Image 1 (cartoon, rainbow, N blue to C red):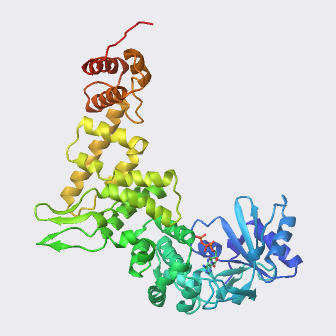
Image 2: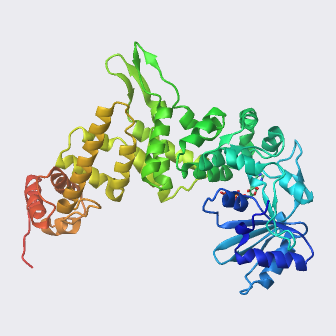
Image 3: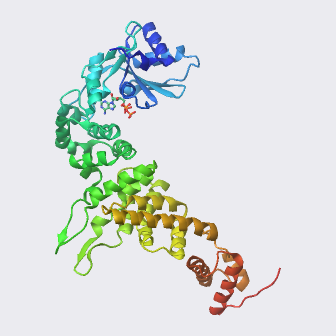
Length: 474
Ligand code: ATP
């Protein structure tokens, strides 16, 4: 089969000519070919394999390109990279890899194209297109990867036990591709992943998180999360989630399975946001429920303060997985911490409760509403409609309250300095008390969020505290 249409970007002609000048064969391999056949908006990178030195080929290509781009060489890996327009092109020499039980790193030797295809993770990632001038565009598909693409199957080129045990990250990659492409993992592969799942422990957290994030960014993340759970991988990566599994029953009272509930919430939120961190917040919003679960005869199952517990767990989880401990983590913590707030509101919306919500959530109030809407997983259609409708009212109220009271990113209308000046005070406890009273009065709707009303309240409060105002008009 010829796939010349895949190669109509001029860059391929230039690579072909450069390879010819060096008298070596070169192929496009991997994701680019796969995504072309799938007609998937192709990844921005192209992988080239040279039967010979990939670095020499990269240098030659750079010389033949009009702008002669810089070549970045990674000596340890024997690879080189250059950028052409907005595409990253990576060059590698064909290699043969053999793994030994006692080492994580393979022994690497120069090899043929077949050797190189053998070391690839999946049949759909081992497809290669010939760049030689005589056979330009010829497809080399020794493992029937095109058939697997058509049938939607993830399969390893070699015995799966060898492929996964050699490099356990491939287990995550299999599940990631199954999620992104909505493919099925072939039975033998799936069994092998279950068998080898514990070997994921030898993979660094950074590499695991790259795959996890790709699962989370997919249209339906639950595909991957379920596969991670079913194969046993999830317990090594995110035990906080597997701990949510199961339904307990005491005296005929049950709680819902918070693991499967969480998966539904994640899929729901994925329909409404592409924000990775809001998706993570959905994934983690209930993790505090496992350690806080209690049963009491009076009220049944409770998860008292699980939001607070959960937000603390977010920090430990991010730290363990070497995820960023920056404002993204704080955002996820805040979402988890506040995740039940709008639910209470949806049962009865008052202006003051909405003002408090906006005050506490600040700029994140819309994200919080999106999370809470995704959290509605009831199968009762009446309740489903009612809850959504209530949140619609809350959203409307947020807009009204915002326009009127400006409590988002609240700035006190009377400053501490003004209080000190008015009562001739040094920094002291009274200033805090007065400021708090003003804030409370605004949030409760006792006074509007305006200077004059707040000033008057300050005078009253000061008087009640036994302070003397030294009012002057300058
Ligand atoms: P995407 O860009 O969506 O991540 P990709 O297939 O291009 O998909 P890369 O991680 O860039 O993914 O890998 C490029 C190619 O290198 C793959 O198509 C595959 O052939 C090979 N490859 C990558 N990682 C591995 C691995 N762990 N084991 C074997 N082959 C791999």
